[in-house]
Length: 152
Image 1: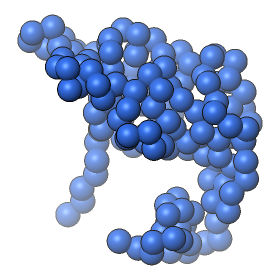
Image 2: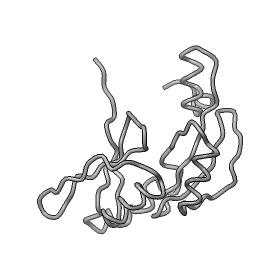
Image 3: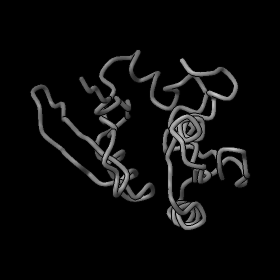
């Protein structure tokens, strides 16, 4: 049996401003924008070339949801955007107005820099370091916290 996480909810203030940001500044593709009852929409975006998970942009509809906009992980880095060319992606995103919170740095798992999206959620832009062959080593590189906490 195989299971995957298909999408994760990303609470936004407004559908159209979020679509513009993700498809413009972030370089994502708009995968789907389907009207639903009560003015809601099913809106999915994903990085260009991605074959994995997508973000489901969900417009806040209650005061509790509105408070979550920009604070989806309580101030921690919530999202991890991998790239195969850090320098090119970093410069493209900076030129498009993405606000990086630190200069790029090299870590054992690759090159990384934290940025904030249009609402203030924190993301890591990461170019993972190439790892020697072997599934355990590749998993440790893709999931650097395993070095600290071990496999789950």
